[in-house]
Image (cartoon, rainbow, N blue to C red; front, side, top):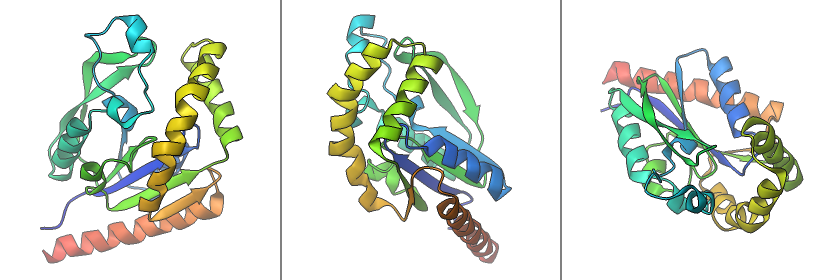
Length: 213
């Protein structure tokens, strides 16, 4: 049985430009696209006090609830809606409210470790890795965490050196081996154009197989 949705996983280090690539795809492909941020699947830590939540290594694979992501992604692929969790980055915890997500022709799972877990990766039709220099990524990380999320600069820098950088080298960078497409320097126009052409071709082929089934 042919699946109704074409699923894309986009991974890469913090600040690599994954979200920007996902947005480019959403604007260019011209079909209904659902974006599933991996960050929404950080584990619920309501049982921990704030001080302990602040010390959690959020760049380690164990920080994510992979079973829930795999189950919800499978439901979307099967044509069913899901209640996607939401995350509060200021409180370092999952929010009480969820968001109803309907299945669409194209689903994009985007996050630092999107290509890490095999049960999730097996649901992808296309694996993408965004590769950007570390100095560019740390500047983007600082801008996001300090300006957008209201965190202190010193804390962001400490976190980068103690967990973000080593976790990138140990867990994130190695997932590049699973990528069907590698996009250099974030918004590389030529690479993104090739990616969009590939998606158009794959979706068209998937649609033809659906009609034949």
